[in-house]
Image 1 (cartoon, rainbow, N blue to C red):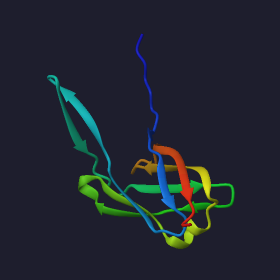
Image 2: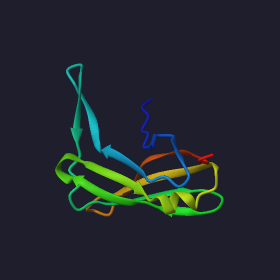
Image 3: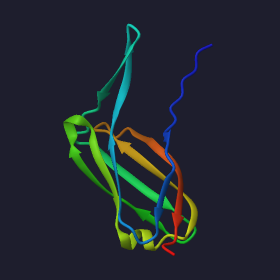
Image 4: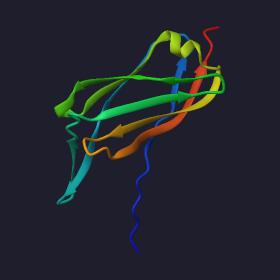
Length: 118
């Protein structure tokens, strides 16, 4: 029997409330051929992205900056004001990619741990 799984990569994010948070990503696919694995970047020209941190006090939507579309490079950013709005403790987050055909896929998701400065 074969399986097909389309699950997001799991990444736990930890930061201090009140800090700016920037997470760089390169989007692509690992291709296996003749026993060799090669990373092939996804050209994200024309793609849209959404990333949100969900906590008990607030949901904060990130700004997504495309750094190099042809190379699949983006940065997910939350400001110090946004992270200050989050409850200290555990929440969750996700990153959704919407391609030029409006195909929407959660590509990264996971827990968020927000810490206090003191």
